[in-house]
Length: 407
Image 1 (cartoon, rainbow, N blue to C red):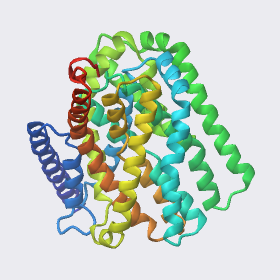
Image 2: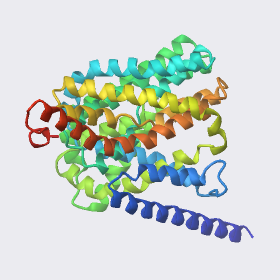
Image 3: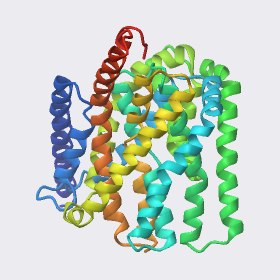
């Protein structure tokens, strides 16, 4: 009897996963045919199968949830492979003022919106965190899909993302401590542990990255795959345990890997990244309750419109400081629009702590709006900006920037 039940569950799991993955494949073909990132389509699949939907997944949700966590880790690891430790540190130093502008421009609307909705200061503070932080997972996927990892504005985008994740290393322990009524001493201790952990891993990545790369390299694809994947997941798990973002841990491992190991890692891990990244986007939408969205949709859409503009302004200002031409400034801003995994985590803390019942649905509607709008504006905003720049320069009798300006 138990064996038959287990067999039935196994068959149902395979059927559900097979149908979801095949659906993602068809949508990825459609996205490629029209020149768009597949992320919005993946989100729609999750919505069609999530809370309040007539069609629900039964037993594959836990597998997809685990896969989604691996997806974010692999997205950031492979993105980290594109940059060296000295490049990252230089970019962080240069972009520190941009990080401050980012915090003011994007946390303030969330805090004010919470107060305008009649929420208390704590709920408003949590909504400020939701609107502040961009989605590392979505943006990493976008940069890869659109072939922009080598663009001149991309280091600025990555520096902003890393600064945001480091800010979360302070923000999350602070909010969690307030929610559980912890003492100021214990909350401060958690923050210090998180900051020390990030600093230590970054220092090791910069100083001993070459030695680590030589140590992990193997001519056997099997050995190298297991080594890189195991090491990345282990460091990401330790980072999460220390209340640092798992994404930051994976990104720093990618920074530390170079040479032959990095070249081989691209071929070995890219297919796994694409599979589990799809699981991340599907699971995110699966957790959204369709029935709760209409009541909070107006406020969420208004907040999304305001903070989309403030994120574009953040990227534009940061890229301008880095000496990037006007089209690249807008590309940086468009890339930062998407919100995602961290915003959901922040809202989840508040919901679990019973702070404000409307915060969960509002965050879901807000993040879903920008998780779809971000990829769309990133893909189609660049040609619009180029045409506008062409016309402006032509009106001043200058040469078209499409002929003179690099990425």
